[in-house]
Length: 246
Image (cartoon, rainbow, N blue to C red; front, side):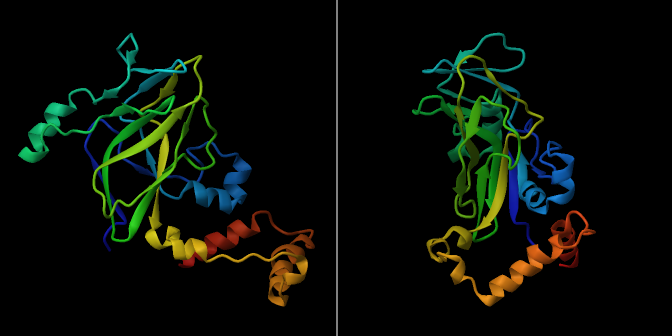
């Protein structure tokens, strides 16, 4: 079976994507990791993406500057390429692509906003896209927010960027190359197509619940909660058993 996605590492120093884990990189409370299947499933959905190198980003409310380990000063950011990439890219690229290595960082017109290239290209299977987003259920370190975006990577082959908005001016933001800062999740195009999203109904009152709805509610909520000896994590256990069978 062909893979859902192939990541191509262009910046060789970038850490390769990793399958996201059920504990939000080890940050979930133990009780959530053990009993809450809804949370752990969301955490494990997709792949971790990493910054191409350790980065420090500073914003004074107007301009963005950046720095990296071994460089003592901050440099005003317009666009910056990963050190040494241009020559390596041109050595590998066909003539028509030489001189076109993507920038690693690009300041955007909106205040405090920039684009970070993950150092990757990506290609998904036909009719599959990638949702790029913050890590689910991960405690924010503060200082920045990621924008979410859906890229139709079966049709568009190029650099996998993440858009980031700095939110503080009093202290630089540090991104570590060995820790994920974004997550890529696979989406079938039909999942966000207008016919799918437009196909929605809502009921307005309790009287609209059917007998089947009430029967399912009793089985899901009422009966288990009437059992004083019910085990913890009943939903998680049942979901994991279904997953194992499938």
